[in-house]
Image (cartoon, rainbow, N blue to C red; front, side):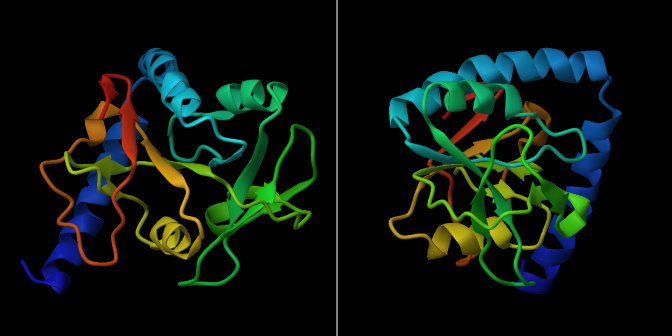
Length: 188
């Protein structure tokens, strides 16, 4: 497949995967989330991060906030990504429960105050993923651009449900493989 065909395939696959995820009953997603969180915590701990970038849950994604609040209680600094402009790297802004937030891209909340944090570990949401640890996101390329721009490059943990597993995402030169992928079924 050439890039226009891959781009069209990704768009179609992304829509189908999101539709499938949103259709999963809430009770089942909660069960998956509990299992995913149990698998994710030791992966994070193994990296011993001081600053963690995470994401605000969107469209029935795994919600990392309970785990993030535990990391905060352990003295970790945490931050949410904020898009500054189309087709650019994001910045990570310090987050804590109760801080002022504003609507960002896709109306996803971001911290209003621009206190920039350079994470040493980033949790990246997965719409889809493959066995080579490449992720299919929402199509804006923001996480790949951001990971490519951050120096030193943080560990990148792709987080999502097993229903997003694909044979391949047809990785391109601009795609960045995750350090690890964690789902409710396991990690690799």
